[in-house]
Image (cartoon, helix red, strand yellow):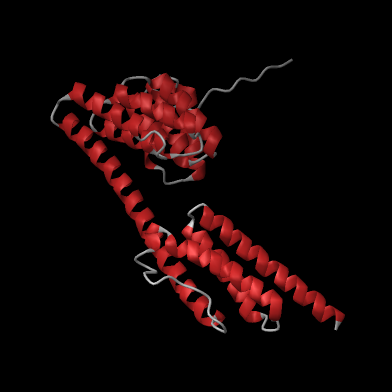
Length: 292
């Protein structure tokens, strides 16, 4: 008996707390949270039918107070034109009505948020495509300005810098692309997307040593791969660093025996390292023995 009384008191206390939350939310004009708190209170009230007398009377008054304030809100006039109240024995009906209203408002909010996000994404796409079109038309100064304005306007958009950088690469604006792509890597070194575009830009600019350093950074960040080793072999080859090119090409082939570009690099650098004999065949690398 004592346990039942204790449980009842706890239930009443929790219901009052839910109603108090609803009152606070309705005072802040927060309709969704007001409805959520009221539904919590009514759910517990329905599940605790032994609440009677003074306790139930006081709870009903508190709920009605919140409901009157809620119905008086301008945004609720269309949804509750005749107001709303908790009638005697109508807890289940009111709970069903408020739950339906809560769900309806939730869907409306979700739709509004979706439309807002969609409009924002559309604005980004439109700005980038306009800048890209200017570049395609050869209006490079206007394109640079348009890309810069887009980057500044949508600075908080994840991936915006690498997106702009990649488009600049495709438009042949390699010098401009480097700035955006380096900033993208600086902002998120673990995003692999900017590295490939930056490599293309640097190679087209003849910045082979910078491209090699960037590739080494990618190797540290993402670990070894056949592609990374092949790229490093190609860059060492461009710098006439034959031994390094040979080592990197071999490393690529160790990971993937069918790496055709790495095999081609090996074919190119072997004669430069080992030389050829009179028949044009590649000689074995010399070894030296010292008698100490």
